[in-house]
Image: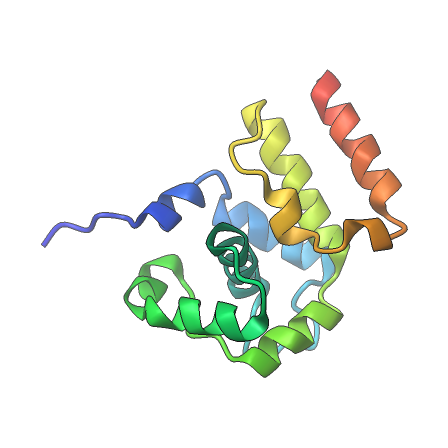
Length: 140
C-alpha cells in the first residue's frame, strides 16, 4: 500500500529534520536526555498549538489517540511527566534558531511556529533577540 502523509506531517515539511538535528547538536538540546528527544518535543508543541490543547493532560490524550501517525513522524507516545520535565529544561535558543531558519529559507512564514515553540515569550529576556533576528530575516 502506498504511503500518504497525514495533514500534520505535511504541515511539518518546512522543517527539515537533518537541519533540526544540527541545531539540536549546536544548542545541546538533547543534553542529559534519555527518552524524549527534541524532535518529539517539537512535534508535541506544534501539535498542541494546532489542536488548541489547554493542558498537558489534553495534549497527552489527543496525541496518544492518534498513535498510528507516530511511526511516520518519527515520534512515540507522550507521557505527561516527561513533557513537563522537557518544558522546564529545553533550551529556548534551539527553537528560536529553528523559527528564524524556517522563515529565512522560505521567505514567508508557512507556519506560525512562534506560539507553538516559545510558550510565554513575554517572560523570556531573549525576546529582544528573537525580534532582532526576525527583523534581520525580513531584510534578507
